[in-house]
Length: 68
Image 1 (cartoon, rainbow, N blue to C red):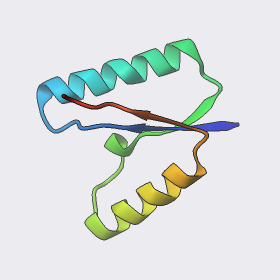
Image 2 (cartoon, rainbow, N blue to C red):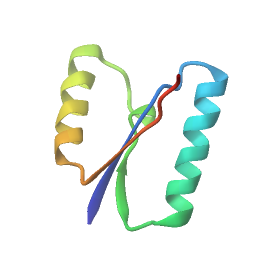
Image 3 (cartoon, rainbow, N blue to C red):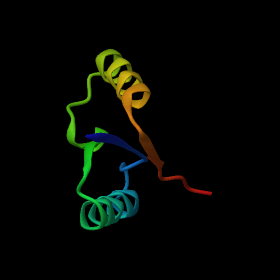
């Protein structure tokens, strides 16, 4: 199974809404991906960073939500 990593901020309501919309699109358009969603994981600074880096290296697709 292909792996997808969704990167982006979710700290404000607007950011969280955009993140959730991106998730909806991903799940509705192609459910063939195993998705890693950092938003759904407990935040422990040192462990979280390392796990995120490993997950990014393992993914086939990286979707990054950015703000201008």
